Length: 436
View 1 (cartoon, rainbow, N blue to C red):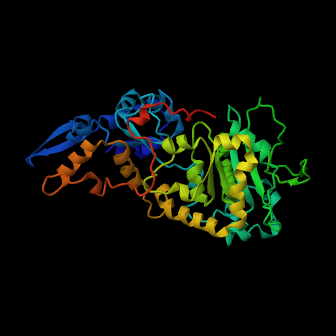
View 2 (view 1 turned 45 degrees about the horizontal axis):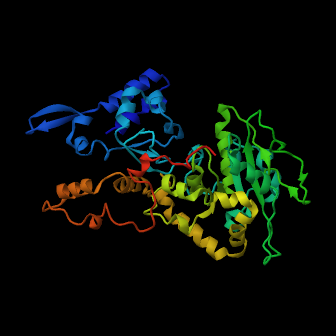
């Protein structure tokens, strides 16, 4: 109903804010032509339909994953006051289910990937030659750490464990994000080798930081042609501890392709809090088949920022480190993860298998994606009351009686542990959902 207007091609291309607001207002006041006895029609607005009045709009859903919608007034600025007022009454699919400001009726956490997913279809290896052929990168931008002779047929194409980099992080480091800065200082020049595996080859890592101009840092800009010897005597790779080059808007695709290349050639994706407890990089890792390592206040992450916990056993294939533990000793906190990565390929392979299997619930563009269906299921669990569910069963059952809610396929009991914030919990402030 709403998407027929909001996803209209003209709106997607429109730059005039007044036109956008007018189209959004039209969606908020969309009308239905209802046949009366098959002979005549009456006009009813969305908010006057029986479907709306039953639950006050909570069983209607709007996908609004842009992180800026977390701020009061942003929905109104983008889509106008009329639509913002309308949207405040319904369920929204958001990247964070924190509603202490009362910006929406209810929320479900939904997965979203960054702009990089437009570059290539899910599950298809994002290989370096693909970037080169489309002119998105230059050999000197990425290949300085690689063996150029095997760049077009890298071993990692055939063996995941042959990926170029062990750990990956690329993102902003300023504005009170202590975990990220601590990672740069403690992990970037660290080459860990398990004691039980003296012959293991220690992999390089990627730590590319985006700093503000007035941020004092000694990190050089990357890519850089020279090699830097750290205090431990290791030759640091080009992307182990450096500042990302700032690109203008016209080069955003270039920047996204570089991000994707490094992520898809790494084994571990370090997920630190940024503007809030999580970001699109968690879903990006599914797209790139890179194992996630959550480093955060874990209760808040799973309560407000991890989607579809009822259907996805996140803890079975996702590494998780409590933020306070990481702060005490970053290297010690990562050591068990790296031990498993180097010594227990069978366990790591099983994690990758589970990640691949459940990716169809995370990736909207995956073949036979189940993401939209999972969003609706999550809405029934997080936003609808038992009374609402019973009313639905009564309306749709053949005999007009309500069976046990948990026996209904839409409201079945969770297969896995689900700590997602429900309607009432979302109205309490998320103490860990701050900029870090």
